[in-house]
Image (cartoon, rainbow, N blue to C red):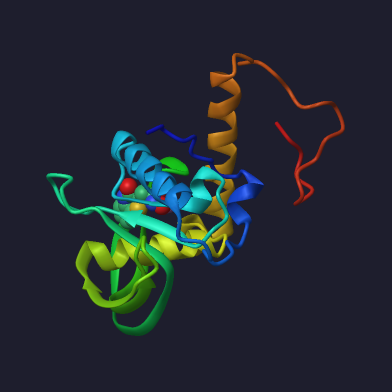
Length: 187
Ligand code: GNR
Ligand code: NI
């Protein structure tokens, strides 16, 4: 088993649309085990393969307190959405940010298990929120995409600054003449 590196916003690799899993083999089993290890260590309640730079349609979740309810959804599809519910979301790829997001309250999901066997499940509560959040990752979508662009840019600037400081260049400044996409001056 091995812990995998989690990509962080605004890494462009998080925008990749994942391809269907077609081979159900020992390598897939190992990837699933490594994703669970990475998720539990983080700690998080879900992880999409996209977040560990594997662009296949695979998510793992465990919303139990005791970490004893691991669930894998491969090539998941939402067949039915019912109700609306707003809840605070966070993301291992957007550390320290928690904001309300509206999702369907209940979803019926069809997916395959690690052996390729199809199953269908009705999900509600935190599990429904989490699976919708993870399935967005497989489309290259992040929960911050539901926020205003002002809020998202603020988060991006803050995370980029924190990353620069962690890398040990606290006073690094952009090359003179650089501008952000909006045309505003970089401070
Ligand atoms: O650990 C996580 N917590 C969480 C809380 C509310 C809504 C969604 C999530 S998923 C997140 C882990 C993660 O980033 N999965 O992609
Ligand atoms: Ni996430």
